[in-house]
Image (cartoon, rainbow, N blue to C red; front, top):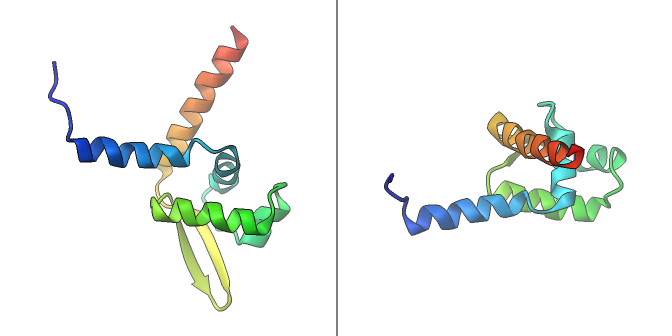
Length: 102
């Protein structure tokens, strides 16, 4: 049996996974997955999520370093920090689709 990681690692892992347990955050990540930067207004125009809610979810994702913000004047642009987050999200989606087809 392999050695288990520290309690702190599992706590941090759980905190990171909580980001992916919200449907609105998953939708925002789906919009961001192409690697482009988006403003809150652009994200709102492509989703049915109110701007204030988007801002709150982006803050949660920034805290876990899943998305990053680049400021340019008064505008903020958001993008995903690491493509592996997209890969993980898509892998979970594939499992869900396969389960639904059974």
